[in-house]
Length: 115
Image 1 (cartoon, rainbow, N blue to C red):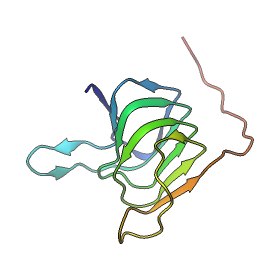
Image 2: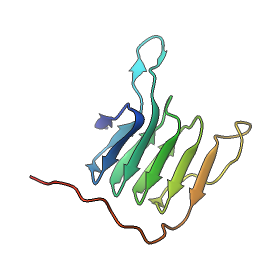
Image 3: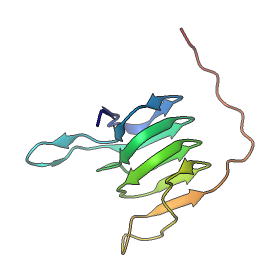
Image 4: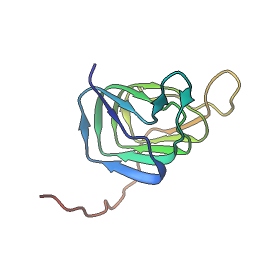
């Protein structure tokens, strides 16, 4: 399966993308462990494969078509997504801490530049 890596920190946005395959939100260090990643934002997108959160934490996904989600550390928030969206779970015991809100309130999208 083709994949894309977006191993970021400090709320680096990924907006209006179509990922035909998996999306890895962290970098795996072969033979060792998951690399550092802490905080990001995915919105107005489509991911046809699995989104792997790995070591990612404080992640926010909004208005995105999610084929499948795998993993979670701290504060994974899903707002107005469709597809295989994780359900809300409030602790590290018996699952990952997730907050899922079904619909997005009316919002004004930020402008962006296209070439």
